[in-house]
Image (cartoon, rainbow, N blue to C red):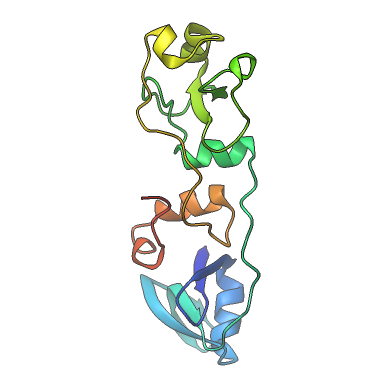
Length: 169
């Protein structure tokens, strides 16, 4: 079981194990913001299982740097081809403006793409290939302390969503 760990200012810090969360609660370093509705049994009785906890003190962290990686591009685009909308499967990274036409390797020119669309587009611009982007690529405005792939996973948990800022506008 996993527990969302928030800083004292309610910013997400990490996802920790249930064991770690109970340890932080037991020594008085955190408060429970949300329970998941289940219990665990201990020799002393039953304990409600926390889903979201918040530290009582603030942890200063440097502003995270979101690296331009394949994993982060796929996570930013929610593992969805930005040309046809196919979710999952064998995905690649595509330069919207091909490198041979002066396209750069940056957040504003890379998108998640299925192999079929990548083969169709080849070394052309989307306009030349008769294709259009579902969404213009851009650098995410919110950079989580948690890795981008882990953050996307966190968004799938309905009880955690109110505590997670939106990834992009």
